[in-house]
Length: 200
Image (cartoon, rainbow, N blue to C red; front, side):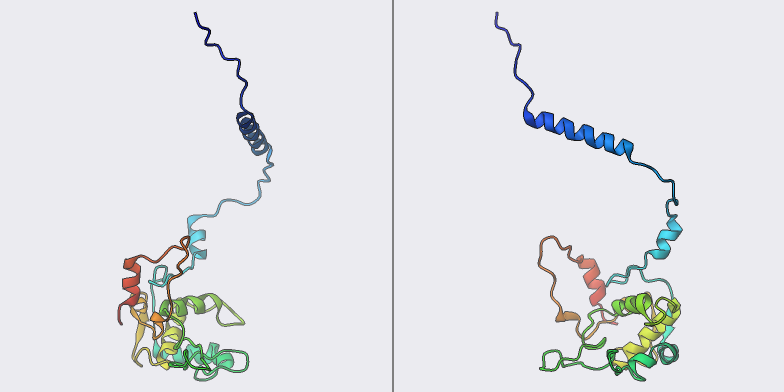
């Protein structure tokens, strides 16, 4: 009768794999716990999750008019960016420059360069005013966004922006950008693109 008992020894890879698993398990078990702090609550996470997508996802409910924005701009923005958004010194212009991007002296402003109106809101909300970032209320951000877009002849003088209307605004340079072709970069969904490209 044949003897099927094998005298083969475990392969080196198997021994190595088992050893790595055992070492990792031991290290995890010995990791010290300091019991400092606590898990963040959902409310705390939401308060810090302020990202706004081009299609408007993440915009808070609110509204603001061009007229209101003129006052906010005068009080919080004009000292750096000029009375009409023309820029002062090292502080960039926010207004003008449309039609210059293909010239020998392109002027990149909100009106000439930025592809999405929602990005204007997002940047102001996060980073402005320069000396006191994040201190404007949502209504003030909607309002000053409306005023800057008005000065760039993108919205009319009586415009009131909301979380619904802002993503529908088509910026002059919307088609001046091309998608990132790298395979590891997620492309926007057709639904998001269609929403972003809708006319006001």
